[in-house]
Length: 122
Ligand code: THU
Image (cartoon, rainbow, N blue to C red; front, side, top):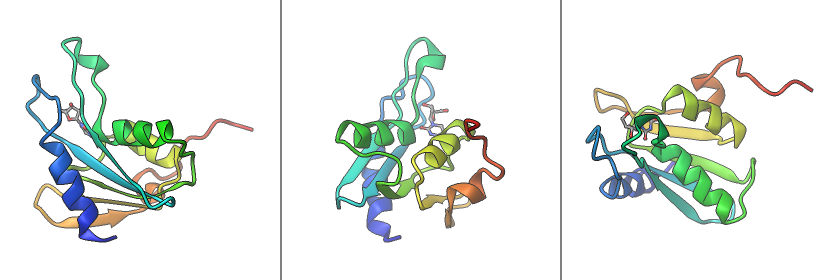
């Protein structure tokens, strides 16, 4: 994965709406159609209603017509939470790139991030 996608995620993070945690997260997805979809975390005064950057990026891609298998790679400014790992699995991202807490940038497949992933039976 090229670092320009991570740069897009970092730029997007500045537009996050996180007045409660003050923790700004950005994500950028490269799709097979060549487009890049950005996302940020969007919080709410009713805390559990907030949504992560990865999910807003995937939702943006879906609004544009993308479906599972259409999204190649995602860069995130932070390690993805457990729920977002399930979303990355659902949309069959191929590579997930983010900086660890110590700053080292790492790349994983969704299967590496969420082994023995749950799927709807049948
Ligand atoms: N957050 C994300 O946007 N992505 C993650 O994978 C981890 C957490 C956001 C949610 C919340 O707005 C803030 O980070 C603090 O938890």
